[in-house]
Image 1 (tube, rainbow, N blue to C red):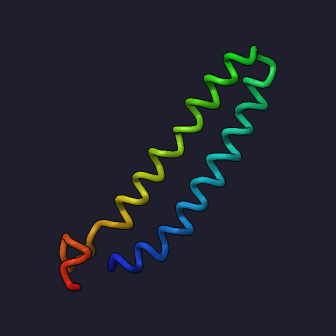
Image 2 (cartoon, rainbow, N blue to C red):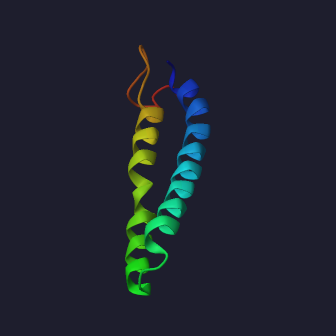
Image 3 (spheres, one colour):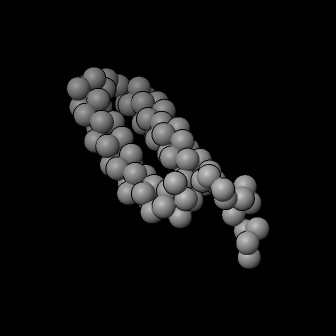
Length: 78
């Protein structure tokens, strides 16, 4: 798959990752953390706030990887 096609598919994928992660994070908060002290909630939101980074990093690496027959450097053809 060409890099441009991956990017075309990757943008909606990133949006879905962020939306699904946010919904799951709020659901977990309401189920388990809502009644806990404020300092525990702050720690939860700090950890959960960085959690979307890992699936988004995977998607961005996939989007920027070269397809078959493409150069490793995306700017080599310019």
